[in-house]
Length: 187
Image (cartoon, rainbow, N blue to C red):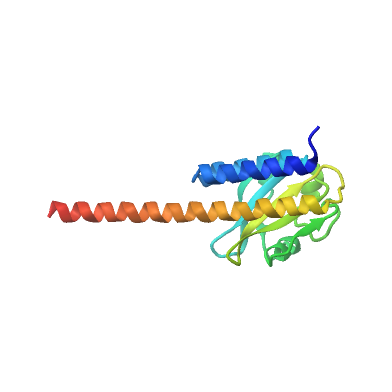
């Protein structure tokens, strides 16, 4: 039987392989949250990204959460003490989201069967891009290895998002240059 440490290593390897093999951010983010759920034996995981105004966290990808829970309402940075801490670069643990006043949608968490939540920031070049959340269906003390694993995946996720953004900008620039060249050639 594989040890948890080997499972985490294999999952990190898979996440890295995905990031290097695809510039489709939606596909990469979906695979990342799926890998996190599998490696950590979770109920669910989600990856949320800050909007342009840095006021809300928008869903980037999720695995294991119902559509009803995902549509519960906006994740407002000001309303969520948990996310405010994470967006300042801190890893946060909610021992029981069903009763924690800092968890923005505690009653919805109870309905969804969510108990403990581990939240880590996605940071790229000292800029926080969003958060990666791990959800359990029973109260759980996350181990140091689990926390380090999720932090490593969050770091890789931030790299993947940055790579996709850079690729998209380069693609757009090439298209503009090609269109400009066509106009010049037509004249």
